[in-house]
Amino acid sequence: MDFITEKEAKKKYIIDWWPAINKWPQAKLDAHLPEIVAVPKDVAEVQEAVKYAYDHNLAVVPFGGASGVLGGIVPEKPSLTIDMQKITGVVEFDQDNHLITVNAGMFGRELEDYLNERGYTTGHYPQSIDLATVGGLVATKSAGTFSSKYGNIEDMLQCVEVVLPNGEIFSNRNVPRSATGPHLPTLFIGSEGSLGIITKVTLKVWKIPERREFRGIEFDTLEDAIMTAREFYRRDIVPAVVRIYNPAEAQNLYEKINHRSDKVLMVVGIVGAETVAPEIMKQVLLTAERRTGHDLGSEIGHAWEQHRYNADWLEDGNAEDTIIADAIEVSGNWTVLPKMYDVVSKRLEGKVDKLWAHCSHCYPSGANIYFIIFASGKDAADTLNKFNEIWEIIMEGVHEAGGSGAHHHGIGRQRLPWFKEEIGAVSHEILEKIKQDFDEKGAFNPGILGLATK
Image 1 (cartoon, rainbow, N blue to C red):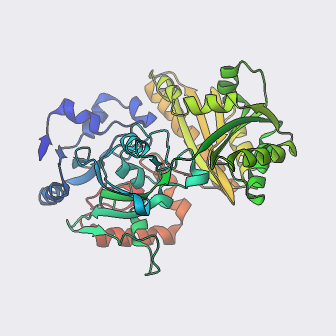
Image 2: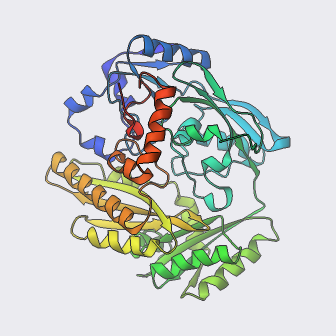
């Protein structure tokens, strides 16, 4: 097992895509560096690293691809960070049962490429697919752009292996479903390294669909588009992709086809059998017409597909001390979403330089909303203060409207002030008791999920 102790080399282990950390002074960054970084090559060495940390009273922080946006890899106390990237590769591809087992350090793109070459797909296409490890996708409870068809990571996971704080290995039986009490693997989905280190994952896979169709549809209002998405479920014609953009964000796609519009844009994607996909698209368009929907054709839909992983706005929006940008994803039921959007967007007037917003993950009962904010300040400290004020406005507005303040990015450090309120005191007490039993020293990613440290 390799160890990293040099200060410069350790810096990358606390920097992810969390906008706030870019505004920290150097002294604060230095104060949060891990004491040491372990780079194990197999599960036995992960166990050794955990034992080393326990013996030396160090916290344990798992590190995957640093694709998070909320600071979940920033140590709260002197720590040993465990870099999982060398524990990678496919363990078994079980085509007969539509399953693939991979080591947790494998990157999402590597997994998808492996499957695509053999005619399969996970169907999991998060924007971070090139940056995130499979273990990280599970630990943060991720969602992909085709979630309406394939589900989110919790729907794909069939089996998980985890090194627990005491060094033991947890794994569940590899079967599609089992009515044998509470489903314990669920504890580790979204646990963000607080209960153990994910080392191996078995995911369900699909054959690559015969046909893919994408389309753009204009709507007069956001509510018209949202209620049309609800109607897709009522008519059982749910596209694999449903994305609804407010007029400000829609301009990015309108410009790609030289189209002028100040209307709401919906992008839909249908994937499936050659004979079925065109008929579903036909019904989608007929449904949209009933609520001011106007078909823009396939060009704008394919423009979205071609550029769907592009996040230049996030890098550009955080390139200087005096500017900051972020994507804050929340969720709510169908009847809540229009109100949530109106409340939050009105409260952000004068607080942000620009506000984009879109829905991108739909369910029978509702959907998510991304609030993408751009703001500026006089210097790094002032900009960070404004950033935190914007977060507070959004979280309070979403909770008042009856929604959830987190859809799929997780909690990290940025969402901690609202986490306990969101899940409730009783739920948090249960989590704390589980944490105490799993991790007596409180060593695994201390403070994450607001769990007490010792």
